[in-house]
Length: 132
Image (tube, rainbow, N blue to C red; front, top):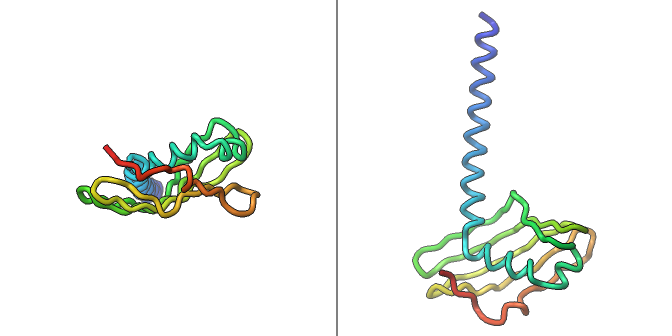
């Protein structure tokens, strides 16, 4: 009888963990599918200084944090994207506003593990980026 209770408790704990992991997975997928995420990552992946510091290829980590809120042509995004290359790891940090379907970044940089300061990517964005 004791093993039935143990198996039941363990099953409930596992189901709870799976539930939490699925919610986290859905939220992470939503962040990664946003236009702000795509613009930030593309800018970092194509920056020669970022590639020189982190190494190639640049890959995004799974645990993206932040938020993206979009309603029609307006929105706001705050993202912290862990990245790694063949040499080091770091984080892409972005803050952007979407107005009339166009994302304008007020912050876009890469912090590199073990390196003071951040690599500013805002100058690499020549114009606001429109999203499909």
